Image (cartoon, rainbow, N blue to C red; front, side):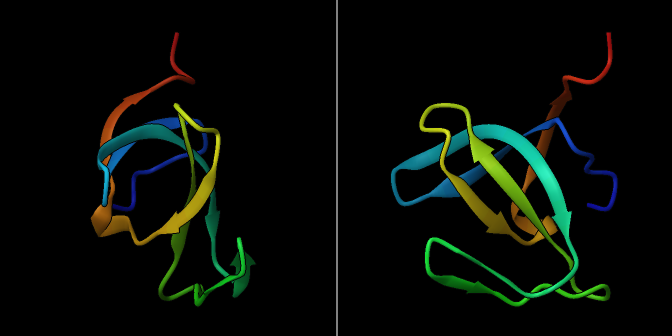
Length: 74
């Protein structure tokens, strides 16, 4: 799913069920989030997303995200 953009609304699965949030950014370099290594690269990007409910951030591969809308459109 390469059409994900900053601010786009997405859902993803968690151990608590489906979560809704927004794309914060496309990550193309390795980083850490909450002590977890994110092994992103230009050829294997991940997306940093922020939960609507908790405002916590996590990294997800594009295939684990489902686009639900785009808040940047009027």
